[in-house]
Length: 77
Image (cartoon, rainbow, N blue to C red):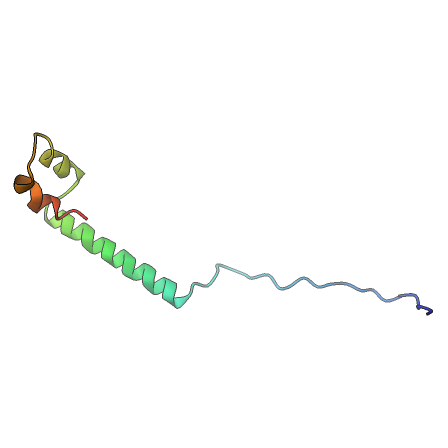
């Protein structure tokens, strides 16, 4: 079998590169948005009730019982 000489240039083209930021799927965007809304709602409720880590430490300072602290501690999530 006789093969001819290859005289033409043979080059591979690289695939097109994406430009810009990757597109997010609609489902991922909606879930992230609802997660952020839930976090904001929890933070607003804690602020409205005057709850913080400092108030939790104050509740637990001197030998607390469940009956004395359960209302405030159950508000933490």
